[in-house]
Structures are given as structure tokens and as C-alpha cells.
Image 1 (tube, rainbow, N blue to C red):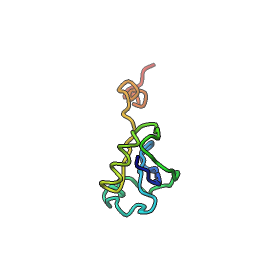
Image 2 (cartoon, rainbow, N blue to C red; image 1 turned 90 degrees about the vertical axis):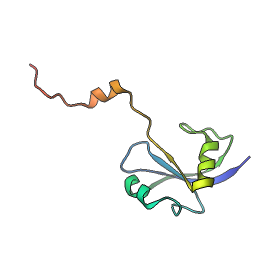
Image 3 (cartoon, rainbow, N blue to C red; image 1 turned 180 degrees about the vertical axis):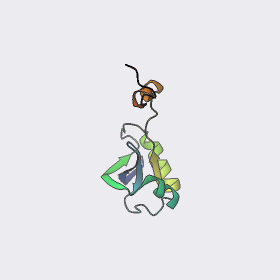
Length: 96
């Protein structure tokens, strides 16, 4: 079983977008281009992550593997259902 002390950052630009990194390395392995799109990372929490830990939207083993291979794991926001997108569209014509 692998374990790693991870720090989790949220994006100020996109809701529900998170970066998981090794606490000792911090953001040094995250590409500059990704950080530009991500925005200034806001630290959310530090946690001991192990293979058997349950996470809401990712498998802990996938997160640990990504951190080991590339230095970070990017959790994207969930896809929105198409019917939900209609709720945010502004009406294009007035109807009375």
C-alpha cells in the first residue's frame, strides 16, 4: 500500500477544479501553462492519501499514480447535464 502526504489546491477560476500535489514538492512539478489557466492556487487541505482512502470524484490509487509519475493530479469539474445548461441561457427575445 502506498501513502503520500498531499496538499490540495482549488482553482479560483473554475468551480470544482482541484490540484493534488505532494506536500514536500508543492507546486514545483506543475507546468507553468497549467498554473496560468488554473489561476492562483488556493490551498484547501493537507491529507495523508493512501490507496484505500475513498475520495468523492477520483480513485485514490489514480491520484497517487499521477503524482508519482508527473508530480500532480488535476481533478476537473464534473460535466454538466445538457438540460442544466438551458437554465443558464438568457432569453433572446422578450415574450409577454
